[in-house]
Length: 458
Image (tube, rainbow, N blue to C red; front, side):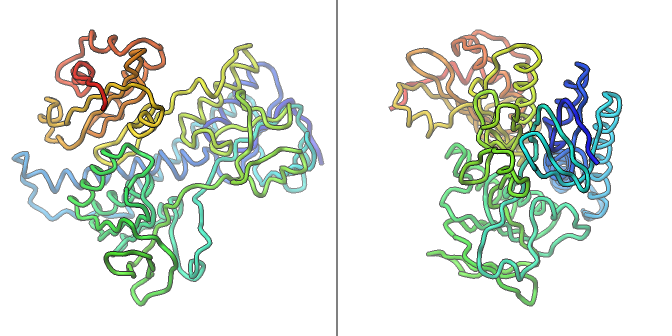
């Protein structure tokens, strides 16, 4: 059996369904192929469920801290992970159903199953062959599983499988810093678990601003998370109480024991089982599909969007990939991936938001720089909320007065930082912000003050 479509989209992550609906609105026949459930990483194992769980952890933490606000809770705080999961599952299901309704209303054909290329225009899904004039690959990424001794003999968790737990671990060992590691470490500590985080580097979050990384480490320690920095995981073994993580370190025990182990050691693209070679689609050494500025692959009528192309790895970058492809293909625009300013957030509490360059990256350019920092305890809104932990930082090119980057680690920082990002996109000088009048009391009101305090970097 075979069918022919104007467009075939493989994968229903953030870019896929919206591109399908947009293409269908032009009168094209569109098939969207999904191997499991609609929504991809964000809806099913990423942003939606994890941020719902972060919210639950925040409530538990707030209850424990209530006495500092004059609120006395008379019962002991107990977290039911089964109920947390039930709430999270409802939110996820609502998101899936919303996508399903959108695709039905758009009159897109949804095909469930594993897609494999058999030629540059054809894929096979089960017993069926689908032919498309244009194809769009949106297959996402998954947790990277290292080839370490003993790992296959233990019951390890990933960011996906940990969401299925209904009972709290006695002691969760998180292997790997970065966003996934620190978010789950804080979350499960606030749920009441003992937590140890093992990171091979001396910096907890080595891709982030160095000062912010240090503050995140300080935050986790203050909440009772045990940090093992400069401890490289080298092997695993079974233990009477669960799993033993063996580490190479100069300080501390060489063995870290826990009831559960979470691997947070990076991501890998879901490209190895697509038979891309049959279509002539090229990938790099890590398996990411190589694309040009318009997200075309090495085959002119095939595009790659989202995590699988290695240009972002976030929901917002995947959605922007959809905007780039749709804008160029349907609206005659000349949108490019390089027009995108890097922006990301780690959803610890408080969140860490970063736009543009970090201080380390800016210094490496050799430019003359201006830089300013302000502690969050200078923000009236943070003081009133009792959440003064954190720091703001801004970096400017001294010659052009253009903002190169900014970081806010603090309450509301993930929202407030967008007023800096918007000025960066406008390609206007930082003085746009120093002349702005922001509402009091807000976190964003300190941003003009931050830029007014810029000083030359030595």
